[in-house]
Length: 188
Image (cartoon, rainbow, N blue to C red; front, side, top):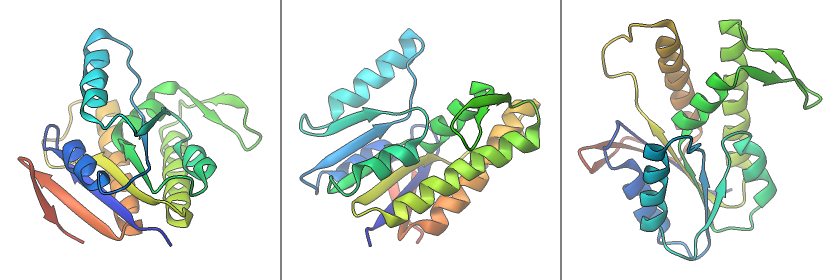
């Protein structure tokens, strides 16, 4: 079985840089980017991240269905690095649709419980696929539960889903690191 490493921390805590340093030990890295660059500021963030990575790493942009990408790699990489779960959750939360079992997007996600159930099922599938992968996996996510209670329903829903997703993925992981001010603390 492959090794799963989960890297968790706040914004600008050094999560991606730490995960990328761990990944440099591998010869064959596939970097799965979940970000959608919809504005100039986000495009600049993506450009900076890309410039930091070694040229031989393969990048796959996958804002949705990350489990399918990991499964499709079927051990063809020494390491799969997923950056990041909270953007992945955001993508699903804001898409406004869920996909039924036939693969058709036909239901609007207006019901909060339905939306949360769908997103957590996607996270569960990702955790399972990573656990079954023949490639080692590093998963990056933001810790969003250490601040104040958000002042609006969507932000609270995001925080709740992200907290549950982080618990699920940390539970699947062999190692968990918490990043604080660029310093990694191994917590599992």
